[in-house]
Image 1 (spheres, helix red, strand yellow):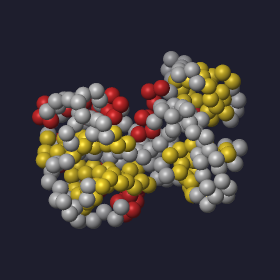
Image 2 (cartoon, helix red, strand yellow):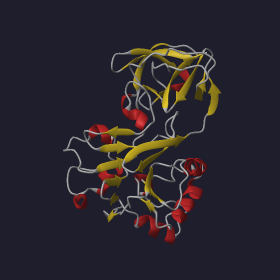
Image 3 (cartoon, helix red, strand yellow):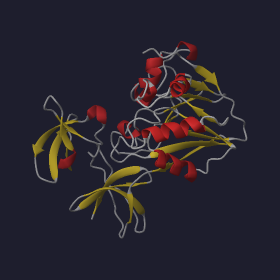
Image 4 (cartoon, one colour):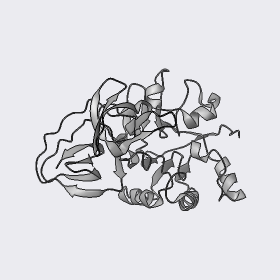
Length: 311
């Protein structure tokens, strides 16, 4: 099914705060929680970078909410690859709205697109690539963009090869800002809101994990490997019920939770999300998000960065 290239212009008044959110993936409650956290109001400009309803727990409810939100003049919704086809619950009115969503949105200082761009004028972009370019921050090899290009689509943790993190990546060299926190795709994902106010960048995020207050200081250990989606395959060296020793394709050997080792149709072993030797450095009283608990340690997050914490 062909999708037309729709490029629109956006004026962002200097006194307005810009909020950009990507890849909500049908998690309406979390999306509302994020809007509340950033205190979204009519004086803000909100841009949603597509992939807003598929894969999550509340697909139709999220779709309807965002479709209604888009009626506000300060809200701008783009199309993502998840909005490529027609969902079962679409009415003709729904489909007409989806088909009219912009693929690229351009303002004085920013370009908004779901996945990425090629090194050519906006009106010559390939729609499929706009919606599906993987790992854009890494794979783009063209000249630096004149404006900041803000994208989602590829979970940020899959761009972090040493220390797992879900916070936005600001690539000053290429002029790319990557904001997909990976929720609910990544086991430790979060939903990010990237904020621009008076030329300054910041962000907030929400997630769905239980919180724990740290009782002692933890020195931590900086990671040397974080297994990402593109580099997920491993060889099992020693198997045990809770943790198994594996060799990554890079040659590095580490222990990963056995319940996170899966097998594909070809019999290859791969690690689903939690595969790192990074240990968090924490102070007594720090509050962490508990992602997974094991007999002698937990996998946790602190300020968007994930790692191990000995019990």
